[in-house]
Amino acid sequence: MNGGGGGGNVKVVVRVRGFLPREIQRGAHCLVHMNPATQSTTLLAPSGAQGQISKVQSRSKVVEDKTFTFDNSFWSHDEDDPHYATQEDVYNCLGEEFLDHNFEGYHTCIFAYGQTGSGKSYTMMGTPENPGLIPRTCEDLFQRIENSQSPDVTGVTLHEKRRRVPDDRKYQNERY
Image (tube, rainbow, N blue to C red; front, side, top):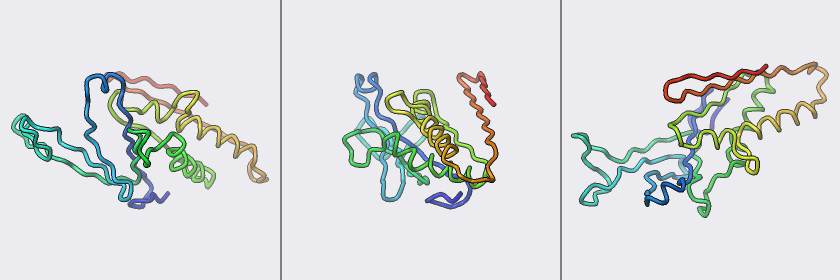
């Protein structure tokens, strides 16, 4: 599985979600900038008391802008932005390749990691009107199985495992 950025078997992507209504209501400012040409993501330091943008003092630490590069960076903060990434864009970039590797015989795994409210569930599951990565991948998976003409494929076994760790309590669902 060779990712677009650094190669290897692991692909790391990041997605920035739009503001929630409560964030809009309190006048929040976006502190993330993405460059679609380089797949770099910059976390901007919050403005200081004197309006400094690049560096601020926080509990005796200097907080400054930090830039990271990922295999893919999905900007889903502003729907009017020409680089806005939809659920379909995320699937086209990750889900199709994921299934390609499955059908080549590789074991694969996709997981979402981040703090509560960061958009993991929306990216992975979506809504009925705008399905996420998992329902789109399942739909494509079953379509590929149905369309398979290979005499070598005599059966398919699926294993799904989901884990949630809210507030340091672990919940696990498994289906075979």
